[in-house]
Length: 225
Image 1: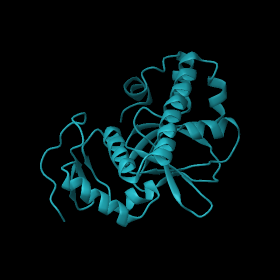
Image 2 (image 1 turned 90 degrees about the vertical axis):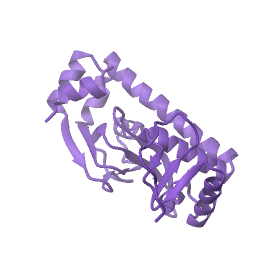
Image 3 (image 1 turned 45 degrees about the horizontal axis):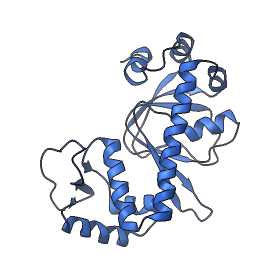
Image 4 (image 1 turned 120 degrees about the vertical axis):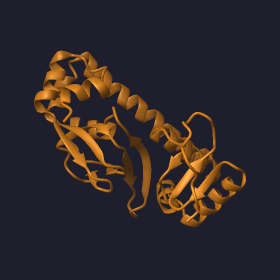
């Protein structure tokens, strides 16, 4: 099994302050979360901070009516800005985090977060996390406020492809509708229009994108189910 020291070198190379590195090795625990399981939920006490080693996590908010809104995805080398904020202020979780793939992560006791802010590398890691999440939240707000649904959908697919590193997305129309807070019928209609324009190819719970050349090509074809 890969040690926490090796994981830090491979996935969090900018954290080099010896006290922080030794603190993570001494206090961190490697945990695996199965696809579909919650890492944290709204209203729950935050007892640990996740540092994602592999897999992907979807982070969402929920309104009073139970409607969910996608905030951002977490992938290897990242942690959750909302979790950091809540734990340092002693608040309960304001987000729901779900593993959309099997996830391996280092979990750290929340008591260490404020203490480690005295160290440059940890402070930079936290501030870079805030900056990245803030930019993504601004993109989400701009998307909702200024873009039509077809533009929001295309932007959503591009972001998901960049996050996964692949043009082949294993996602259903209902999942997309839930993330974009719209109906499945609207998503299906717009996806079909995009397919007719050669921007993607639809399969059973799979979408192969042809939006740009930034994402690595996939092998094989996607067949309709």
